[in-house]
Image 1 (cartoon, rainbow, N blue to C red):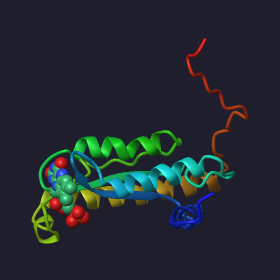
Image 2: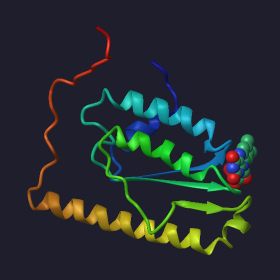
Image 3: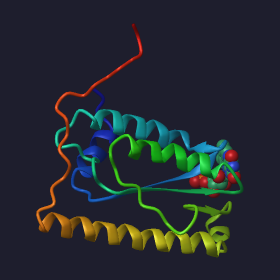
Length: 152
Ligand SMILES: Cc1cc2nc3c(=O)[nH]c(=O)nc-3n(C[C@H](O)[C@H](O)[C@H](O)COP(=O)(O)O)c2cc1C
């Protein structure tokens, strides 16, 4: 068992209501350190009960000079999809373009997309809380997890 930042983050995550993971685009994918981090976070979290991520809303945002953004968003979203996390969307692609913070500030469309995303996340969190107050419980999990490896 590793003793590192992942364990600290996973303990913190149990207290969080929602998540936004962001990455610069490197070679058309998420950056390598975030990938290693998320691999460990989501793999180690799967053994925890209650699960620190399940049914909590999440979004992926990326920053790039030019391209490789959609594949990077897809890559990050997969961690959420595999843990039954509702993915929060915005009005278009969750990306900003530029090489520096000053350039990013000129990407008005990207910045608007981030504002819309933030509002949508806040709205969903309120809906979830209101639902819980009304007695809407989280979906029941099947006790036995099937693993079919297609081996005869
Ligand atoms: C190793 C590396 C690979 C990159 N690959 C891409 C790429 O595939 N597409 C792109 O648009 N920008 C690419 N960039 C540019 C970065 O996405 C952009 O400069 C980003 O703002 C860098 O963020 P950082 O300063 O946090 O590393 C790359 C930058 C680096 C350092």
